[in-house]
Length: 166
Ligand SMILES: [Fe+2]
Ligand SMILES: [Fe+2]
Image (cartoon, rainbow, N blue to C red; front, side, top):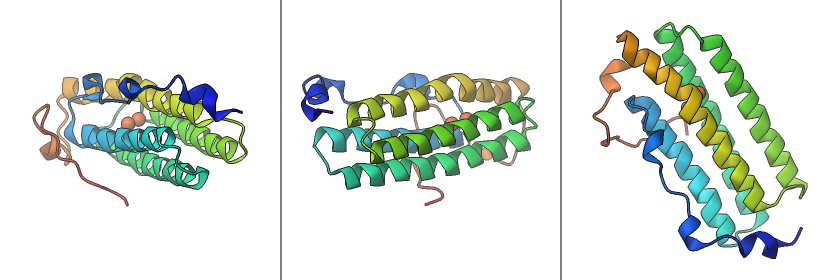
């Protein structure tokens, strides 16, 4: 694998930005997604800056740990609002974590380069968030479910970042 192959195609304006489409309208979930997304940005920036493999593996480990915390957090919200698709959604979380751990091993063994790993991470985060998590938030909003989490709902565009579980 030649590092030049991917470096040449990676331009400054391709740096990952927050997509407003990721704001789903439920404060606690949106706040955690911003932290999650921030870690993927950290990975991309470190890769562009030619950080060491150890540094990239460290960020990847952090992403996996945060994913574990975030998935568990969403599962608690789903249980609290008796989400009808809890089991299916939790099974997807389980698969996503397994995929992240596989990606970690592949990167450790030089079977994937940083740019492809970054692409994987972005799709991995974006697809689940914009599809499955969106369905969950729509359910919460449509059913107007009142849970103990509801007080944490915030006005769109004004999320308060926090670092949970770490
Ligand atoms: Fe999520
Ligand atoms: Fe989820």
